[in-house]
Length: 307
Image 1 (cartoon, rainbow, N blue to C red):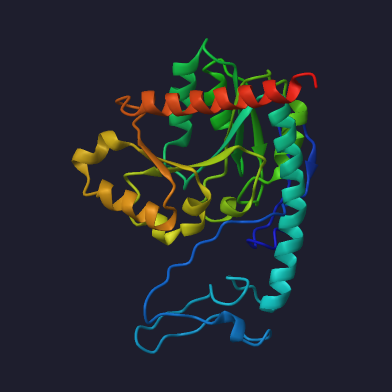
Image 2: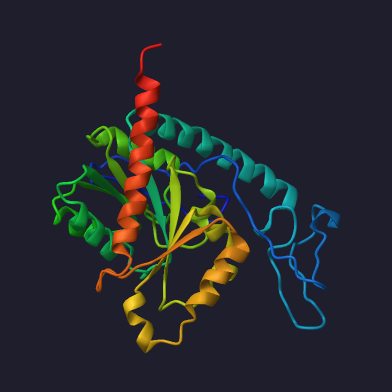
């Protein structure tokens, strides 16, 4: 059971090898964002520890379970208890994530954590990306899903190795899962590792996997208000891929509003408009990847130079 998000971890299966363990979530600092709305301020610290964090605003019938120090609600647990549990879980995860990050950095591997809601086009974009990069850079993929190996099979069809992690009832990957996956993979030095997280715009925001960057993928079929509805994810991401832009002529999606909302949450977030179908933005996305790989290789070269 992941106490941070309330999901049941179930049986984790990594690479189909039959090694199943309960998911062990992770520790670590998490970037969070909260809108400062005039006339709508909360003082969660003033609530007694035993008091439920939800409340109703008389003016607009607003049930809000995100108040209180834990910014969440769990039946039977006070806000103080929830904060302690979350710190313990995220602390363990972050230690594991740092170990993953050191391992990857020592080998010049540029690792990305791709996060989005289901149906955003992550896997199709990965397939297009890997097809474009074929023969140029060594690459590998870790696929995260609750069940099935469908996405890993699609990646392998490109000739790129992919390892599947099935999380069972778990709704996100954690650093321990990724660390165990890395132990099974034969990654090349100075390569690209793409981690496709479970489709979920909530829980993956809190769990560092040891990646260099989180990349949030927002499809134009979803709605431009997603960055404000799920702010922690967009606050944690360094890049937003605004995907499926070839469909814009058929939609009422407001591109500039979506970008404005994302930058209201995270002023530093980069944005690239992409389409796996038309190829729009793919060159810009590949250039972004190549800059990251160059930086990772340069950092490795510095650390491996004799003193």
